[in-house]
Image (tube, rainbow, N blue to C red):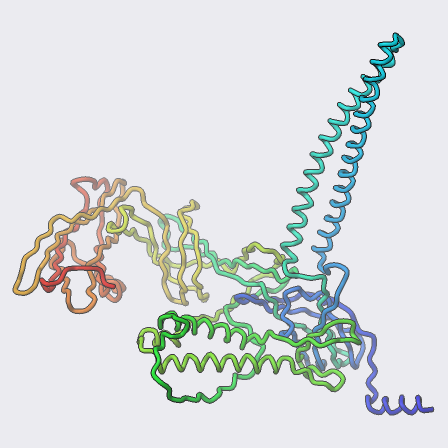
Length: 612
């Protein structure tokens, strides 16, 4: 009777909630957004055709899953009550690729052991033949002395020993060769397994989602972050002679070692920082006091600029932690048979048995606390440091651009160490081709193009390879280029052109208290080809550090370029640009030349030196 009363009380407390058997499923990977260092993975999980409370156990989560990032998306017909992350020990790695490798390793070990034992048997047979030989020789000597030697029997025994020894030598050599080959194969398999299971353990990772679904609900989406995933941009630039355009193939090199295969997924590439924190961090008061004057360099014996760099690095770390909130708290799951990490889920928060799991809020508190501590240290540095340049750079973070690229088709990427190339887009762009000569640096003349990004795609900085008429001409890089911006693409050396620079004369005289030094330079460009060539010829004059030096371009046989970009930027930096047309076969005395005169005036008590 007491038992019935207790059950009635328990029923009254829990209400009419009835938990069905958990639905165990893997779901299907549907979408992946790859960030710099992490990726957001989305699985679509089909729901059973039943209304009411449903407990989903989503298995085979990857090794590098971030427990605190799990969340499920509710809909108008689905209310997510909680999302629970748990781990449990298994007999072997749960990934299919690892299981296949384990089977291959076991088979190789079995074969290797069989060959090794065969070699042991051959060794014992060889020992027996040696003992037989030791028996036959003395016995034959004794029988020969007594005159009773059976020559035929002795010959058969001797032939048997020689034949079996030769056979054993051949068999042992073949077996040892096979064993060495098997050991190499086994070692390779073990290295492959170690590579894909680096840092892993024989652990199953699962998400348990408790939801309240209506009858018409069909599926939910489970989202989670994984580490060990990143991407970098790269480019292939193709040009053809005589065409005012180039084709830019924008590619992404993706590396992912998350522990799961991304098969047939919609893929997005992003430079944003994934964040699962919805609220801004709380700014704490900054308390100041006075103390005896101390040198700010006392921080760890570092100079001010080094100290500022340390602070900026610490700030980057706290920002990453603040956005990701990746920490989690483990509690014993005695009733579930494993250890659990709890994270609030898409609709109702994580509440089990009336106990609110506040692992994430606790972790967020620590991250906010650390962020305030670093911010306080940076502000104190602003108040105390005397190096203006260091203080100015203190809050100047790295320029970040947030862009997102949606790949045009579904993609498959394996979990492996090497990078895998995927195409983002192929973009035709307008290009103005020219030849560039910088004889102060090199006698070679280069083909280049000023390319205009007239597409709707922002180009991120990355390496490039260039092709002219289908022929590889060299490596380069593309800077970050916004829509409507321009960048320079290189297309290698034009072997038909050569540039030189010569100091023709140097004179020095005194005017009052100053020295005036005059330099006469000659720049030459030779054209060994049969077509005229338009050249941008660059040189430079010194740019003074302060007012102690006065460099002046006195004259030049060819006027400086009137290009607007040159006059706006390069000319102010002391660069000289002459736009020339070099006729064909202009070599030696007929080479195209530019003569210019430069003067430098300075205090005669001083000497010219490099700026520090």
